Structures are given as structure tokens and as C-alpha cells.
Image (cartoon, rainbow, N blue to C red; front, side, top):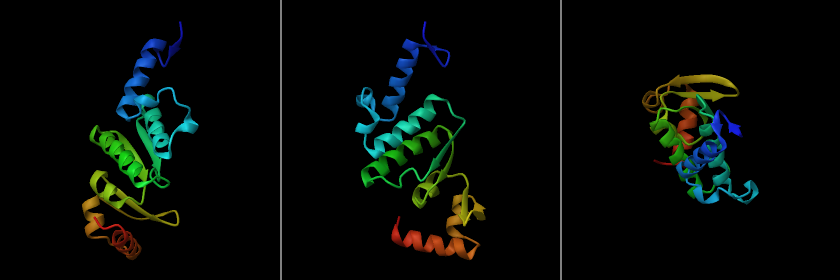
Length: 144
């Protein structure tokens, strides 16, 4: 008998299909990774973390190479995970996403923590000059 993560092969396949449905890729169950778009590959990565029941999922610029449609798809999936209380550490320039989803925002510059606070505080009353400059620049380029 084949066993995957203490599940029978049949149970593992059913779980995988359920996760593919959750990430919106049920129709790609038999597709090769190279045939998937960047956004689809990003969603598969999230699905892998879900399958592993990860306590914490790390994201490093998860939308950096995606077209606008896939940015929204990936951020939407991440918002679902946040609503389910999935712990995530996200490195992002998607300030609106951080403002909406984060419990805590950490601003770093050159590998150093410059400032950290709840989103409402950091976005409305940044203390450090570098944080202020960054937010002014990034929010001017991407108005809410």
C-alpha cells in the first residue's frame, strides 16, 4: 500500500484535488509545470505549503513577475489564507495588500529594521524619515 504523509494514495489524491480547487487550478491537475503561467506556478507554490500544513508560509515578492490579473489572483488567495489565520511572512511592495492584511508591518532598509508597527500606525504616522520617503514614493506611484 502506498502512503503519503500518513494518507493512503487515494486520500492523498483527494486532498491534492481539493487544494487544487481551492487555489483555482483544478483544471490543471495533469499539466506539466512548464506549461503553467507565472501566476499559476505561484499558486501551485502556495498549494504546496497548504498541502504540507505549514505553520508559517514565507513569501518573497510573490507578485513581482506577474501581470496585473495574476497579481490580483495571488493576492486574493493570500487574503483567503490570512482570513483563515494562516501565519505568513511576506516581503512585498504591495502596500495596499500589507495595509489590509498585515497584523504588523516591518520596514527594512539595507537589511536593517528601520521601523515596525501595526499597519494603521505605520501607514498614517511613520516615524522614520526613510519610511516616510518610501511610503510617499510608493503610494504616489500606486494610489489606493
